[in-house]
Length: 165
Image (cartoon, rainbow, N blue to C red; front, top):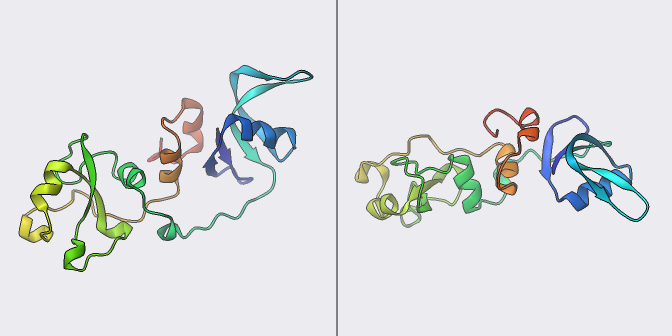
């Protein structure tokens, strides 16, 4: 379930159970509902798809401090190798190799297929004549929603930025 802040900005993905608890405790309101019902002995509730928190939650904007994970790098780079565009057998590559002083930062890590990663090895991009198609940068918060959900349901698309949907 997609969770929106009180300002209607997407902030998280949660389970159906957690969304139901938020609704029953009146901490959130349902924005989009599914076709089925959640039933208990005494009540039934439309299955939530998108919920909005009733009180504003401060979300830190310093995404550079968010943990770098393989899935987040892949999502930021569109699940494609940044050297050749291949979409299979993905790994992560340090543009400036760690052996040459490259840091493990968002600005130095890209998605790379295994053959390109082996070909580049511990060479600098100019030495290997391999440059990323897009300059790596810190991703926006939408990337972490994309990583949390295996697929983006159609009901979420209007609430997410165009690059996430």
